[in-house]
Image (cartoon, rainbow, N blue to C red):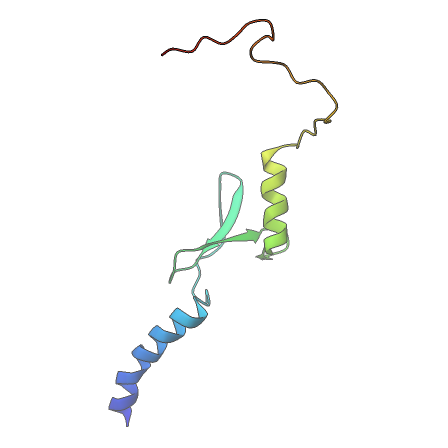
Length: 97
């Protein structure tokens, strides 16, 4: 019985990972590089962002907010402003044949 279970356990684990994905049960300690704190799953290598203040992994919503804040402000341009023309209207572009 033990021999049968020893043979079936890796096969069952293989199909469980295919169908359900990694559970991230084995992770490194949290560390900070370039002002980002995260853990890394030792099984699949996924970066899991981590909050050093609250000592817990960040939710996907918090990760999106963090990346948006790092990217900077979004500029909104009104539609009714005239756009600059690349070619003045009185000149025709030169087309090489």
